[in-house]
Image (cartoon, rainbow, N blue to C red; front, side, top):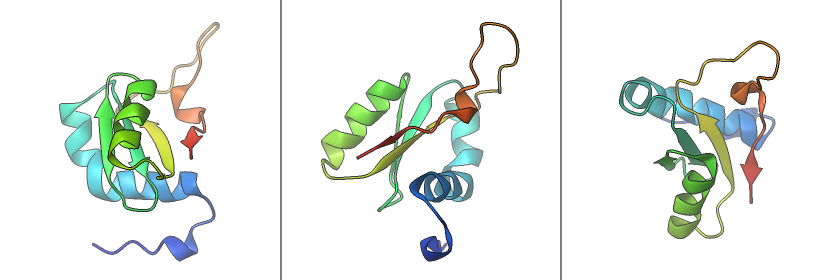
Length: 93
């Protein structure tokens, strides 16, 4: 599968497209509630139980990568005192 990243506007969009096309189907059944750090340049994904751990794993493998963290099968939480994890824009150089 070829990803045309030139048509996308920013790293978040690129990571979301990579996740949707390469990982979503598999990861949502295997790793619900965990986090994937997607390397925007290579398309590699690093899964962990926290966003911080996902980034640490990703940076070990690719110290100069640009990463976006995506919650895996994390439902949007609505209500007082709750935060939507799907609305966060976590990009780490």
